[in-house]
Image: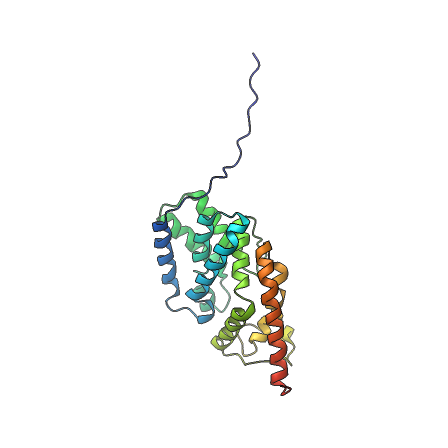
Length: 231
């Protein structure tokens, strides 16, 4: 008799099915990490990222169960990065903390791995690349909150937190350092924010980014003219 050929088992496409109660518990636990956070990376930022994920995620057919958990946990390692002036990577620290939290709540290991990947790859300045729909949506949502009117506000908040000047357009930005007096909102714009729109993964994210980018360019052009006394 001919032995039937074995069919290769395909990876499960089953979506993560988490109760709203579990999500709310984890969300409350995540919020505890922000009781003394800086305004530029506080819980308000996390809530805005969550809302953007809920806007972009369905259009990308992302697993919202994974995405929502990743969104509320993505910055829980931020206080460690702030405490060390950037020496600790908050995405790596956050992913490790998320694994512990999710494991304590009995979340399956496969789901924990998927959430951790989203958190590990959400940073702009890191080489780790988002490989899943959920990770790409989280990356885009987090980056979109760094540009436009909100992004400008956050950049000035951070500059104030580290004691930076209002503006330093006449400085060679390549010779300035983060967490110093020259770490201005303009420096953040030159080093990171003006490049964000070119790094967005999703179609809806790119649409939002274009509008926010245009507003930001106009703002910093006007800031230059105002500080020169031209307006």
